[in-house]
Each structure stands twice: as structure tokens, then as C-alpha cells.
Length: 88
Image (cartoon, rainbow, N blue to C red; front, side, top):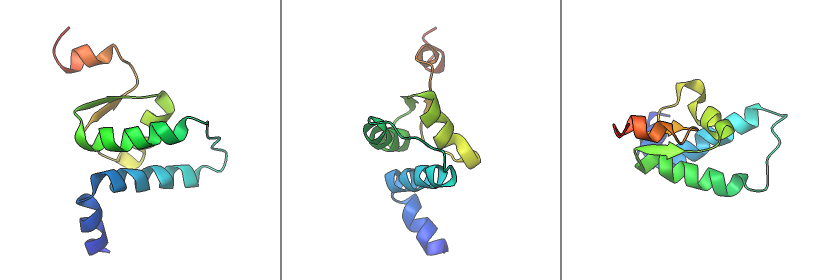
């Protein structure tokens, strides 16, 4: 199992994708929207390689569950970007 974890750590978008799949699988009442697939794909890449990602609240909540850590600071409030980059 350690080798599998090491491999996933070297593939950050897959690591995030698997985390999101686990969170959705745990919630039998999860009702996906038509645009979720596009949001999901963008979130995986953004959270793996960017400094800040702004997304919808439910995706921010999904990605932060189980103390999951990403390279990006994932937020749902666009006005918070200025504070995060010291522009305010």
C-alpha cells in the first residue's frame, strides 16, 4: 500500500480525483449537477498546481474533508483572493 500511496503522491491530479470520488461515494444522497464534471476536472488540476482556487462551496467542502491537503488554498469567496495575495 505504501508504494501505491507514493505513486499517487507523484500524480497530484489523480490523488485529488480519487479523494473526490471517495467523498461522493460516501454520500448516497449526493445529487450531481450537469456542470459538476467540468468543475471537478478543473478543481483537480487547479488544486494540484495553483496557489489559489476559487470554486463553489460544495466542491470546497468536498475537497477539504478528511483533512485532505492540496497545494492550492481552495476557497469559495472571490473577494478573499485579494486578502490571500496581500492586495487588500
